[in-house]
Length: 59
Image (cartoon, rainbow, N blue to C red; front, side):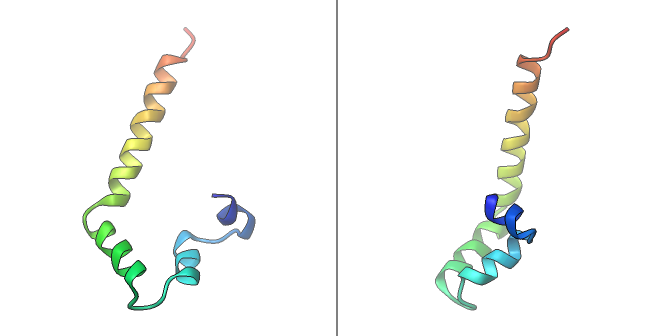
């Protein structure tokens, strides 16, 4: 996260900097995305955040 904020860059741009086109890492990342990994992560983080907000909500 710090890298993205410091460089004001998009995650895809950083991925392109550290993966080889047609390489093993990008193949694995593409498969995870195809299987819904990013969506599952976002939903999990959102659910956790909502729960914490409910727990600490002051009436």
